[in-house]
Image (tube, rainbow, N blue to C red; front, side, top):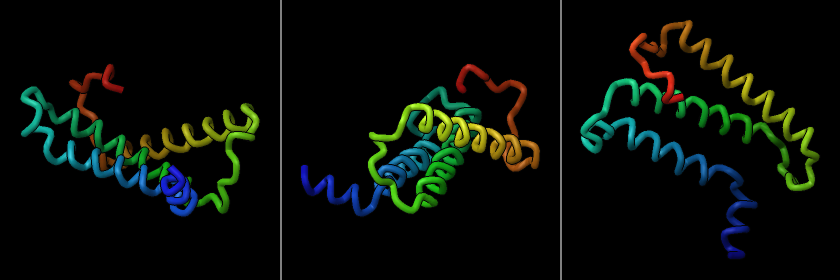
Length: 112
């Protein structure tokens, strides 16, 4: 347990984000072979998750020192979450508007 704590203190969120990106890339590339009812919209949804994961990586690397987040007041954590959510939403909207990611009209919005 102590070794895991030391790894987390040294590398922070990087192992978690790396594993998450690996899982997303795995399903993005192999989804059709694994799931018989796979549709292209699922791949597009995974692309959105990858963008959100990369935004999380960027934000977590920008922090100088994480410190003790458990002592952060709830209102400060809520403001940080809201800012990150709005930033991610604006980034995804910009990607869709620029045409880098297209969302077909047949896309099932319940997936979000």
